[in-house]
Picture 1 (tube, rainbow, N blue to C red):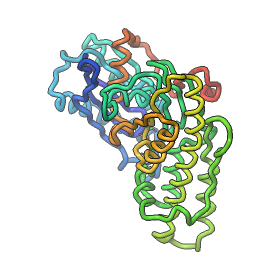
Picture 2: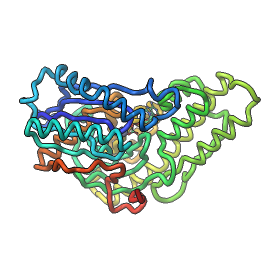
Picture 3: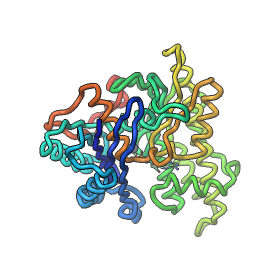
Picture 4: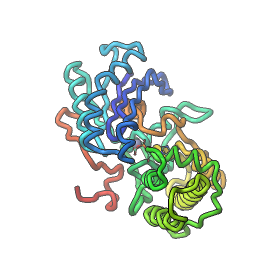
Length: 357
Ligand code: KG4
Ligand code: ZN
């Protein structure tokens, strides 16, 4: 089976083609066109700018993915597109394109939940020994818009163990970068500069740490970064101050993610006596310091730790194509009247995620 996946929910226009040979997923092409230069002057994603940029490049992105895979449309078995959650203008561009291709080619259309695409990426990439990862597993999903701990029981079957009560961790990285005058997106910049800094110099809070449960909070940490910047001598920040603040911030974020994950692993082991691996996914999972810290937590609990390859942590079409392929193999597809969703919780039972629109 071969599926084309389209991703347009935030600031990357992406298209990819994946297939499954036996147990193993394989990426035949993966084209990501980032809009970072368009959003850089604003220090964050501007929804209207994003939607227009998707419209401009989506055709070429898909054509390039087809060319790279050396395939014709008549060799494709399904069209998957991110149907939400995300910036609605962008999601509409991707779903419209997916539906149009599906209609024109008489192929099934699969509306993919962007969070599910992140969640299933490790089943495409596997670990060092196997090409697939079995259910259940415990997932830390950390991106620009989400920060959640979920038990992944199967395709479409998620149990939310904890979520952020305010900002997502990726958002905190981006805002910290913005306050320090670093580029956008902030996460990779903060990580790079943190490597040269002293993480012990500034004392920053670790919200929720030590509490029961698995919820997160990052707004207090962000506020303290601002107060710390304001307490430094007026004028341009010194390179050393920026590096030390990045390092101190990243260390605090690592501590919080590790503490909350440790609680989640305990709950997961109570719920599923046979256990399962600890998986991290989403853009922030590209951070080496965070990966290393989470691996330690897994080792303490005698669980395997799995993270996708760095380039498949941030948004891409391969994860969307794969989630579509997994659903199609179960006989699931969507009607062409599917309505793009700005919100789409993985676990609809979680009241915290069912916020009013
Ligand atoms: O999954 P993603 O590409 O888009 C969303 O679904 O939100 O995640 C983007 C987020 C951004 O906040 C970005 O700053 C963060 O992931 N990020 C990182 C790193 N690379 C991307 N955060 C920390 N360290 C990184 N290396
Ligand atoms: Zn994402």
